[in-house]
Length: 151
Image (cartoon, rainbow, N blue to C red; front, side, top):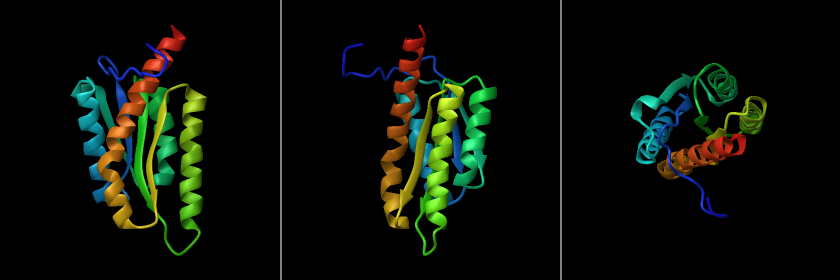
């Protein structure tokens, strides 16, 4: 692999998706975009596992369980938190991000933060169109790098 070109060959990799049902329309768009991109990157449809949780705050625990008990090379966490009129957004978005990062560090399994944190529903709709593909590429790139580093 040359210095700046990541390996985006997903052949033989297994990826888990953990998805928050809250804002279901956004979640569905994120899932379909991620799945399509993973398949385009060479991952077999049967090698993509899918698990659903109630909200973004539940993503880290499900991701940790999937990373620790499943035969996956990466986990992608997908969801959406939209700012409201209270501090709830700050707590949920911040703790979700922190928890997802911790899953990757604690398990050694690449864990991708695919949670949209937006000010409006319209922003979430717009970003959901491309976020899934970005997450799929990040998962494949980091899974390949970890395999390479581990020999």
